[in-house]
Image 1 (tube, rainbow over the protein chains, first blue to last red):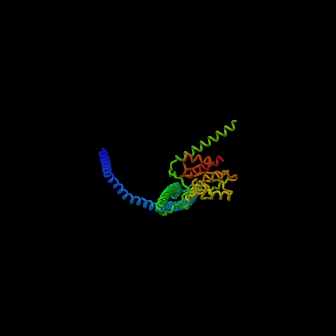
Image 2 (cartoon, chains in turn purple, red):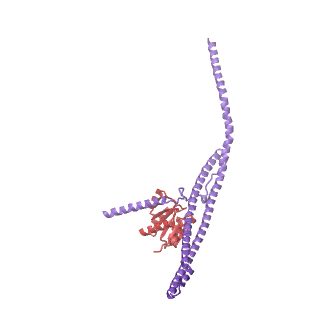
Length: 253
Length: 125
C-alpha cells in the first residue's frame, strides 16, 4: 500500500517534471528571442548614445551659425540704410534745384509779361517769343519731376519700414537659439547622467553667458496690417475713457 | 518747446530707423542708447532730454524696467514715454499702460504713425 503511494508520488513528480520540460521547451525560444533582441538593442542604444553625443556637440555650431545669420542681416540692413540715407540726401538736393528752377521760370515769366506790356506793337511776335521759350512746358516738366521725386521719397520710406523686418527676424532667431540652447542643456544633462552611471566622465554643458540670447519676443511677427496697432489704440482709448470717467466721478462728488 | 528725444533700442538698425523717421517728420534732436541701463545713464547726464522712445525687449534693463525707473524718479517722472515694440498682445499693452507709458506703437511702424503718437502725447501733456 505504502509502495503504491510512493509510486503515485513519483509519477506525479515525473508529471510535474514533464510539464516543466514542456514549459521550458516553450520558454527557451522566447528567452532566445530576448537575448537576440538585447544583442540587437545594445548596439542600437550605443548608437543612440553616440548620436546624442554627436548632436550635442553640433548644437553650439548651429547656435553660432544662427547668431552669424543675425549679425550678417544686421550688417546688410545697415548697408541698405546707408544707401537709403544717401538717396534721401540726393533727393533733398534735387528738390532744392528744382525749386530754384521753378523760381527761375517764375522770374522769366514776370520779366516776359513786363516786356510784353511795355512793347505792345510787336505785331504778334511777342506770343511767338513766349511760345519759343516754352516756359509753361518746362514748368510742367519740373512739376512732373517733382511728383516722381516724391514717389521715390515714398518708396525709400517704404524700404525703411520694410527693413524693420531685420529686428523682428532677429528676435525670432534669438527665440530659436534659446530653444536650441535649452535642448542642448537637456541632452547634455542626460549624457552627464549616463556617463555617471557607466563611470565615464562627460562634462556637463553650461551655456556661455555671452552667447545666451537674453532679450527677445518669441511672438514677434512681421505684419504690416493695422490690426495690432488698432488693438493698441482701442485699449489706450478705453484706458483714457476709464480715467476720464474716474475724474468726472471725483468732481461730481 | 524744442524736443530732444532719447531713442532706446538694442538693435542698431531700429535705432537708425526710428532716428530716420524722426527726421522725416521734422525732429532732428535725439540721442541714442542700446539698453535701459545706458538710457538711465544718458538721462541722468543730459537734462535736456524731454521725450523717450523705447523698445521693450532689451538685455540687462528692459524697456518696461526703464519706464518703471523713470516714473519712480522725481526728476524724470514727467518725461513722456512712447514704447515702440514687437509685443502686440493685449496683456503686454495693459502691462505697459500700468507702468505708465504715454503711448504705444507695434512694429513695424510708419513715420506717420510715429508723428500721430508724438502729437497725441504732446496734445495731452
